[in-house]
Length: 507
Image 1 (cartoon, rainbow, N blue to C red):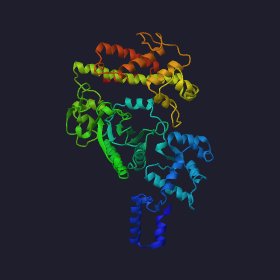
Image 2 (image 1 turned 180 degrees about the vertical axis):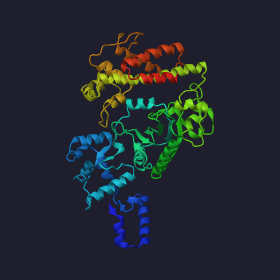
Image 3 (image 1 turned 90 degrees about the vertical axis):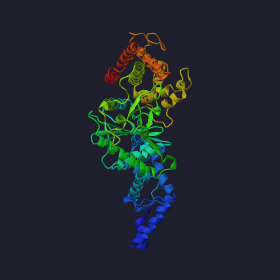
Image 4 (image 1 turned 60 degrees about the horizontal axis):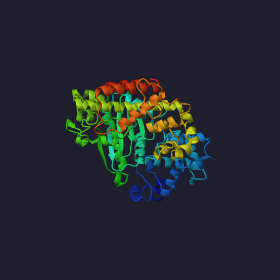
């Protein structure tokens, strides 16, 4: 690392013309990848002349914990960093001062400051006073509790989607760092027994609203919530969109051309910022200035109407909410004035949503049988059987239970099948269902393991739907709804009652 200002003053004194010429030369070498140099604010006085040294300085922070065993005061510092992405400044200082990575210059504090400034400029780290945030190290899952909270909020925007042809996750990490450091200084991280930053979702507070940014395989998704359930302020949504798109553009200027394009659009039905719905993405240009149109993605069996007002009212200055769309602003999933065939399909959609709440209820019950603090021990002690035994799991399930990155497995990542097989084959002292495992319980059979079977069976029914089975007659719907909702209440000890009631009102 070289002090650019000191060198110029030493060589050219106060000759500003020479300073400008040297600055142009440094910018050229930066553009062709030989050095790192930014002629802006606090970075203009320093040049990184050894890029490999800079890369190694970051690599030494995020690699295997063995290299810090003699540095950290205790292993908890490293474990907290490895889970949350927050590294204490004292631990970072220890890593960069260790024999594995010596800072050779005379002013080690200044060297560290310069490194942090460059890393923050490149979106690798958000610098704090006592701790720094490195998003790529965050392994915290956005779990069932967080999902239930956001699903319970009625006042929200549609999901604004930035879909990329190619989207590496580190691009999202850089966006989060930019939001933390460059979002007009008005965004703060939402807090709830800690900062609400997760490996794939970041939640910010802005003018009494909650801003959620999530990443998926091919898209970055944005949604705004009003937790007091008054309407979202359009001014807030427009400001947030402008900020996000400004930051995206700044990041794209420094990236490979393969990710220099994204398409703006919306989820046409399921409004869940934390999930990617590949079959629900509709480009903004297909809706804008069109009023109400048939959804271009669902033209036959799952056809429904898209309202420009309902989807775009918060995100476009010139789109005004129509009176007939006010209910749609609170729930963009459903259409009004359904015909009889459409009502049968809507019954099925409502029941399908209920099975998702059933999955949450199953997790609550699973966590009582396999407490999270003991889950790793249980899985490890049964590892051979789970991988090769009579009741072995498939490869995808084993990856969730024994993550390759050695992170702690959590039931929040398990699907219904995984939890069902663990309960059935490894649950300690569980009474079998009344009719036995694998068989559908009768109405009125109320063992908790009966309810486990109900969750599995009803989930399979909707998961394996076809064009002819994705409808429910009213009588059949009412029967199944009562049977499954009561099972959910029993498994969750009533904690999911509000979610069921909200879903019933939507139907």
